[in-house]
Image (tube, rainbow, N blue to C red; front, side, top):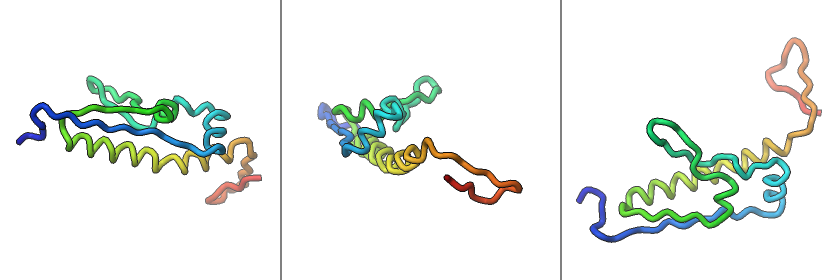
Length: 109
């Protein structure tokens, strides 16, 4: 009645599977500890899932299916942000040229 399921538990399992290029990006830029999800503990925001531990099988067991669905959406949204992260780190090592007066967008060389 209040979101609990009287003795029934629900399990959410997930694993981040990356292709070879993405795995190499994670290794090269040491992104294993990059936080993807957060948890609040006593009012302090702390990393929960990281790229590295999501590459391992993660399991959450909950007694509330509503929380399970919310957590599943959080994990999916975190994964949706990865392509942007990978695109940003692909540009590392380039040289940024800033003209004066500054243009709206910097040029990469």
